[in-house]
Each structure stands twice: as structure tokens, then as C-alpha cells.
Length: 377
Ligand SMILES: Cc1ncc(COP(=O)(O)O)c(C=O)c1O
Image (cartoon, rainbow, N blue to C red; front, side, top):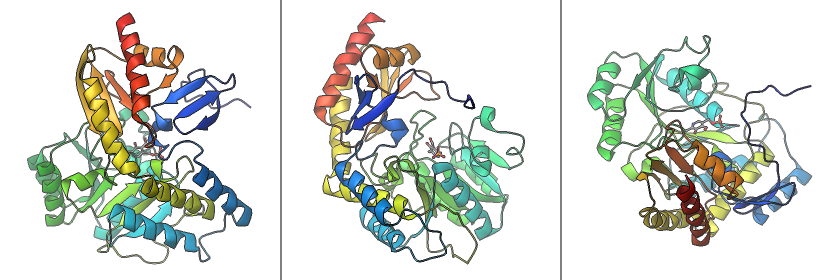
């Protein structure tokens, strides 16, 4: 059987990995500044993570959500203490799209409205409501297009109010730092204004932290820089360091009832063990602090790059915007320099999404390689 051919692939076959390095079948070493698309938070094959998953699978890998699973409570407690989001409730699922799908659905259950407000260049996943709220018509099928979604540019509170006033919008969904779109962000004034308008018009504010959460920006969540309190926070990528797990944090103003949400695999024992060990390592190795320090170092080094327009993003969710398309440069970095980086919807943006364990010496290696390649363009 052939594979359904939806991914344009780089011809590289990783077979093992350790911390910030990935190795192919010929034992060629690649520096991973892509983190499998912002997924690898605590480094590849971290020994505590490997031990936690191995121990758990030997005891009980999975049972359904019809029984008690204390690991879910432990995960909720640890999330509370590391994120500082004290009063929230946790619902667990399996991916980022699923987290946003549940968030949007819950918002609609909660206030009885049906439209969504999302932002230009936003990405929220490929399931029904999540993809409809994603600003990319190419991935929205007619069945998804039945959802009613308004898109606005980031930063325009007047336009937001005009839509919320119509009293049809169940949720506003926003990435405080856009990932796939290209690391654009707005001002604290805008995010606080958005929160205020959502309260005023009984609309649920959903912070999509699927990519920016779990310490990647140097804060646990990207929205925390703006001192806002979203009604729902969606999480996934860095949460399992590669083990599929997602979830939503739900403000106490939104009440649960039996059967409102549900999933077979969500919150299973193995996924919880994986995510718990991720949180323990983020805490014990002070990886949020590391994200901040490495960002500062990275920005200093980037100042001198030829052809650089801007440095975008925050923490270890960074982008170098050039005055030319970066796709050839990215290929050269992979094949000639053995460094993985990311791209974005913005064709001139090279994205840097490494494991949060990355050190200054790896940043030095990257800039050396990048300058070599820039000189040959
Ligand atoms: C901000 C954001 N939300 C949602 C998603 C969808 O996550 P998943 O691919 O796990 O469904 C992504 C994936 O890139 C994302 O970056």
C-alpha cells in the first residue's frame, strides 16, 4: 500500500536522537533548531522522559475514561503549579486541532452562539471548526466552510467590537504569537482590549497556546506577558515532547456536565506520564529561564547578519526575516550544514524552534553555518 502523498518530504531519515541532535541512518548528525515543529520541549530522548514512559507502559499504557486515572489529576496539579493558572479545569485530548475543536465547541455550548472571530494569518489546526478558523482557504473543504468565521487583522479593536456587538460570536480565538503565520504579535493594549470586549459581549476568549505554550516563549504561556485571563487555553505540541497529547484549560466560569466533551484516547496513562515528566524537567532544569537567556544571546548574535530585516518572536519561538525568500537557504542549512530550521507562511522568514534545552554553543554553531551560507548566496 502506498502512503497518501500529502507531505513534501526532505530526503532525510532520522533513526535516533539525543537532546538537540538528530541522527540519520548513516549516523550523520543534524542540529535540530526545528524541534519537529516546536514539539520537542525537553530535548530528544531525555532520560527522565524515557524512564517515565517505559515504566508506565510496563504497568498500564491505556484504559478508557470510564475509570479513575489519578495521573490526570497529577498532571492537572503540576500544570497548575508551573503555569500559575490556578483556578482552571483540565480536559485532555490528543492534538492541537482537537484542543481547539473542543475549545470552540465548549464556547458555543457555554454561551449558545455559533460564529467565530479569528485573525488574519492565524493557524488553529485541520479539524472542522479549527480549520474554518484558520486563515488558509486551501485547507478548508466545503464541509468545513459551513462554519461562520469572521477574520480580522491583528490589532483593530474597533473592528472586533463591530462584530461582537452583533451577538452571534461564541468565541474569539487567537495565538498571542502566531506560529505558522510567521511570528506576528500585537500589543498588550490590544490583547487587554480584546479580553475586555469578550467580557462585555459574553464571548469566550480562547488563547491558542498549542505552539507557544509549555515554556517556549520563556513564560509558561505567551498570553501571560499581557496579563490577560483567557476563558479557555488550548495546549498540545510541547506538552508531550513528541508523545501525542493535547488539552484545554477551562476557566471556572464554564461549567462541566457529564457527556459534554469526550474522547477515547485523551488523557490516557502513557500520555499523562509523558507530559508529567515534561513538566518535571521544565521545572528542574529551569528551561523557561534558559529560553529567555538563549533568546537574548540569539538576538545579540543576529544583529550582524547580512540581509536581515527583523528578528521576530519571543523566547525560543524566533524568526529571522530576510529581504529574500528563504527556501533555498533552508535547504542549504539542512543538506550542507546539517541544521534543521523551520519555514512559515511568510516566505522570507526562517523559523527557529529548538528544544528548550539548547545552549549558547549550539547558537554559535548555527550562526557560523548561517553566515557561511549567506556568503554563498
Ligand atoms: C497555534 C497552533 N494551533 C493548532 C495547531 C494544530 O495542532 P495539531 O497539528 O497538533 O493538530 C498548530 C500546529 O501547528 C498550531 O501551531
